[in-house]
Length: 369
Length: 154
Image (cartoon, rainbow over all chains, first blue to last red; front, side, top):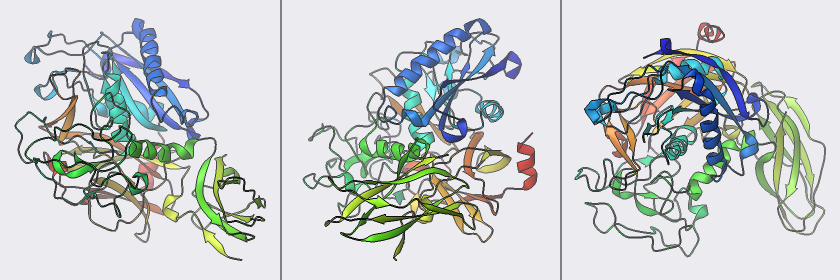
């Protein structure tokens, strides 16, 4: 039950939007597939990719994403299913040693993540996110640096939730540790430092909350409050599902920590990512798009002004341009200049002219070589 | 003519990376390889924070100790883990402790010639510590050596 129980066949690019060096790369490996079952893995992989493509905001960012499949054979099919957890007792010989019943919990399906990293480092070192699909229809999965999930209906949601953690740094938005009805203690009220993660906060102040720009003026802050911090908040959503605010109950605590929307995939599976999570995903993948908004600025009526823009590589950008945001506005700009900076990056400068009688807001746009 | 830097330095992107592989056992973390990779990295998060924060992040600093890259990430050193369910009698996600925390994780940092110091910052590593909100402190610091980089090419 190790690398001796199969072999790495190779890597295939199954979503191709450009070189791996220029795109955000998802790598999917398999475990518990015999040589004769690799075609099934190809189909299972395609099914997951279709699910991901249908999941906002990945749909709109798709041209910035590549997907690679690493075929790995195993001597036997499936995953270990110990009787200690009520399983069948099956102990197939698989390359990454997939097994249920980790920590004595049947649904906790894990693989040898060190071996997964060894394979990925050799096969596809440009990986931004790694997943392992296990050839069993029994429900299970796990997170961490490598997302693992089975072929059971709905198990791909595990992959999407874990991608939120691993690739985008999201916190959990659920308000409990072991469960609302678990009788757990010590999770009544969050009193700690501000979480560094983008999608939870201890700060429900409208003026200083970290996602305040997404909160409408009419939305109360905090948006909901838990009246009994000894348990999870039972109230339903008093506002529309899309309303961004500060909903009390998040980050493993019943009170004192807030989430941006009533529901989110980081709170419970089978929900969309909330607006804050979607924005972070867009910001993270933006540099991998064919062109993207680099920054936004304003130029006054009748003004000519120069901007400096820095890029961490040399040479870096194929194209830089200006795109007015103000309706009906037009701007002129000169061909950008460029020079290598002291840090090994590239410094660009671009001169923009506003010949109109009103200030114009505009985006800098760029594309990568 | 006024000149305005619209792109703060911490928001610049990089197209050369080091793929750093770490092993951990408990709170002991070891850098085991550094692999040079041609790839674009996500932009840095703000290099400084105005307040104490909890969570996990890593920084890359130059020879003068000045951070040039910082990313907030999910804590890869797992003292607890998520369990999922499709059974309506259970929450779809819950957490359980890890008895013997041990594993491997990878971090991607810019490959900048004079920036070879990586620092990991974390809240205290213990069961349920993520829920307590204790401010993160430096957990480990590594200097990436040329030997490690050359070894990563093999």
